[in-house]
Length: 155
View 1: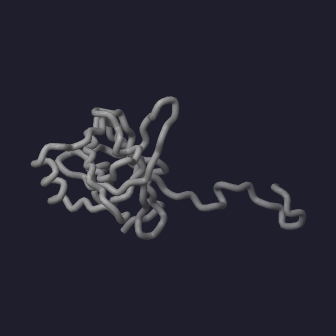
View 2: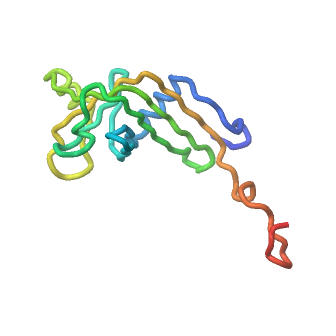
View 3: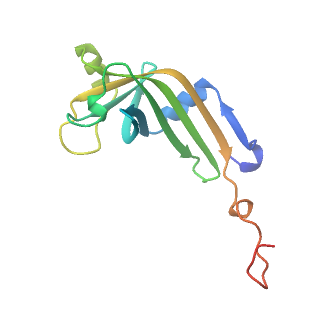
């Protein structure tokens, strides 16, 4: 049973825990530079063979990435009680997959897009760095200073 009292305030996760959390969800945000700006998009993904796979459609900014583009992927979650949160960041290179065997591997991994329409571009993100944190969600009384009941102002 997860209890907030049994966990340290912030715990840095090892690589194996990061992969365990990556396998526990399928929604992430992918960030990359495009010209002089940074783009960030939500995407569904599946981890397979030590990489992350994402499908997207033609004409999307994500689908028009040049080969071996540096990206960051971030995903978060919490335990079933809402008391412990986690966050995992994957930094690596994204490349469009064209090899037939790799496309079949992605199909076997169960990656399917959430939005309608053709999503025929497969992107594989090969991690260079994986890091994560797990932490106790602080109660709101730790965020705000106490109010004076008589005046309604901070004490």
